[in-house]
Image 1: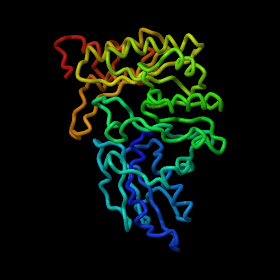
Image 2: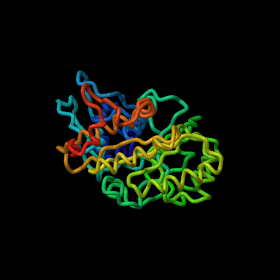
Image 3: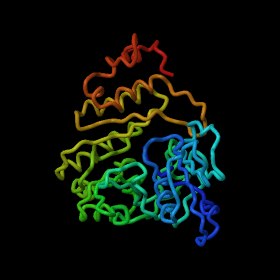
Image 4: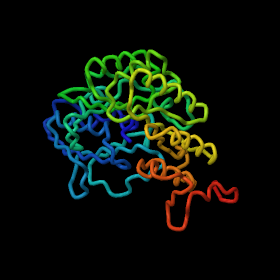
Length: 336
């Protein structure tokens, strides 16, 4: 997915430039190492260099570059292992160094959406950064700290772009974030908070606001524990009370307990077609050699494909020839 990871680059990004008075036009290459999803940092870097008159393109090993920027989102994915045909390489993203950040001049730039040939109605950004929670599977508190204001929605919804994907990690935990939601409603924008909302923070008043938002797809929540089922139920009931008729989407982290994970995911299947879980096997960011249990892969393979999820029970799902997932409910079946 496009995340805050993408905005972590070094302030050394300017070192190759020395001064704004330089005359040479630079050849800049961009390389997204481990994700095909639009990388916000690379789009901003592209905007900056194009504004300086530089030539910017996706990295092609057959071409020679003055500088190549490599973006890596995840710590557990392999690095680019080939020769870089460039005088200089700058690596950024959580996959390389959690502490690197974009300089303000680039961080505030309007992204170069042409880099990914993104629809002219679409924009990406953050209203807030950080999160007050300390979930063991999340790097955001370490990377960004506690929640703080970051940008105004008017800085993101520019040039007629009115379909906005917002990547805030916990926008409801900030008064500034709530004010921005009010502004989104007034501006009539369609939005998706694609990292999910915290159901525990949904009050009656916040539910009223959320029901007024024009959603691109769903309202997303995190449902990572059994206790959060009740909170998500409470939040969705409140939002529905104010007239929301759309779908809900629930991020479900899969930990080491098959029965608990299945129970949590299957709860939403029992609720009906408006309630869609999305399974995410737990990744230990400090263990690049971690092995994901097969049951987690199969549960995700069932739940994360809507047409499969709605058409069959997990017990009847056949992810590969000769195996039906009903075997996981046999105590003799290996689920570790």
